[in-house]
Image (tube, rainbow, N blue to C red; front, side):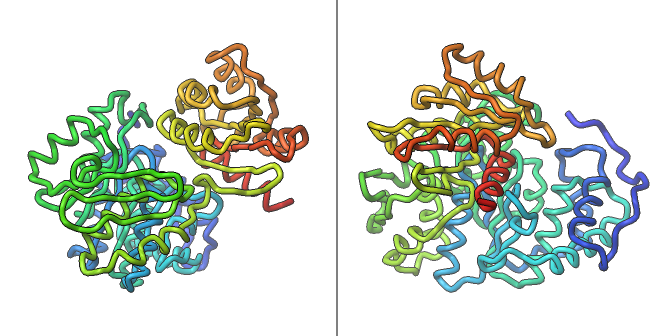
Length: 433
């Protein structure tokens, strides 16, 4: 666990209102000795100075191992289409910090971010905040200043002790529970489920978007008398060739959705949440809205001939979804080529085990970033799963993609994945072409 810190220790001087966003982000990285310091006490102290009362907005909090970003994007689009002013807070970002906060579908600008940072800095009065905690409070300020009606907040890590959880939600969504962030959440689904169930509140509505919730989640639901809508119980998904049908246990009509590139469970959870939040809205336009939703880095198509897709999946749970999706698209005459880069604290072996049955050739790239795996160690860990894998190494992810493209045929399929850092580098490379 992160070391204990002096919450009132001295720190570098704040950049001020005239500084650039990059200067502020560098400052945020310097004011706490740990990248992650789970706990709500410090964040609550600053929150109460910023917001003496709960913000006048409807708050939707979304936790889960995978699928959070897709759920946020779909629900955001549905609420805006219904005429609701909507803000969204997600993390991490792919290429620009501004991506973390959207107001009515648009990323906030540097000027607005800096103004929010100044307000948080004035309110914290020496209390140490991590980069994520500071940014979360700034996001709350931005959404409050924009006076949006709905706040959709994505949990960064876990749930119970995540900074987002300082606000009581009016609706909670748990997308999935699986193994990730072992150093902070443990390596047991029951323990992780307990942490994610920390976003629940007594008697508020909640959605569980996966078919197999841990007992720890259901125990918290029962203890707090949460009004839970659960996949496989309150609602069902029929995943057909060209459409997805969401059916309900009550008398409400089923909702037909187009097949999209996002996880079906996440899309369905957003639809169920929209139905809960806006029961008077007609379901007729839901399919049209969902069909337009795109999430950067979530099975995002970047090029054709050969097709190149990018996905931020970085744990075995995400890799299993990705493998199933790719298997349905794989050509009988083309190869499936993986371009992979990973962080050192991720379950590389579990990811490779999930993907190796469908991958014909691996192009591995090193990541030059905090916790990034250099090519030597990455290659060793991938090969440890199966010494017979066809592996080609590059020092960078962009180099791995370039080598893959040079050897690919037009009917091959390339998937670049492994982390947000991997996809960010791949997207920059493609944009430069």
